[in-house]
Each structure stands twice: as structure tokens, then as C-alpha cells.
Length: 106
Image 1 (tube, helix red, strand yellow):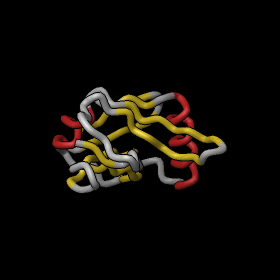
Image 2 (tube, rainbow, N blue to C red; image 1 turned 180 degrees about the vertical axis):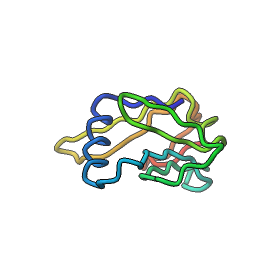
Image 3 (cartoon, rainbow, N blue to C red; image 1 turned 30 degrees about the vertical axis):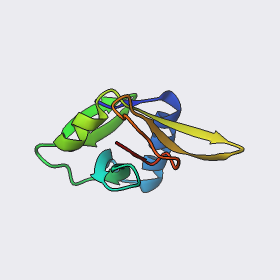
């Protein structure tokens, strides 16, 4: 299961309100690619598959496909908003190596 920090939960809830669709969940996935082998993907999704792993974290409905769930178990989604820029990041204890861009891992 992926954890969601309080700051990330607030931002996700705000973005979901802007979408105006209460059926949407935050999908967090891992896909092959990136400079280290895997890359993260996050988007709002209302097409939830029967085998998706669904859970509520900090008031946010999060879904992951079974393959991604194995690679994201124990990871934390965070959100930073500062002078150096704003955005989401994933701290993944399963990642053995990450690239300089922070968007891919192995």
C-alpha cells in the first residue's frame, strides 16, 4: 500500500474538487521506462478494474494495479510547494537506484 502525506492529501483533494467528478480516484502506477528502468505514473481515473487494489489514505481514494502495488508497497506520495518549484514526489523504499530526474527507479 502507498502512503499519502498530509500535504499531498490536501493537494489531491483540491485537484479532485477542481475535476468535479466524485467517482475519480488517484491512480498511482509503475511503468517500464525512464532512465533507471521504471517510472511513476499518476493520474485521476474513474475506470477502476476489478483486480485493482483500492484503499483510502488520508481521505484520498488511491488505486493501483496489482503489478504496481508490489513495487509501491511502503512508498509515500508527498507534495512540495516552494521557491524551487512545486510538485508531487514518491519516496519508495523498494527503489534500489534512482536517476537524477527523480522520476525513475530500479
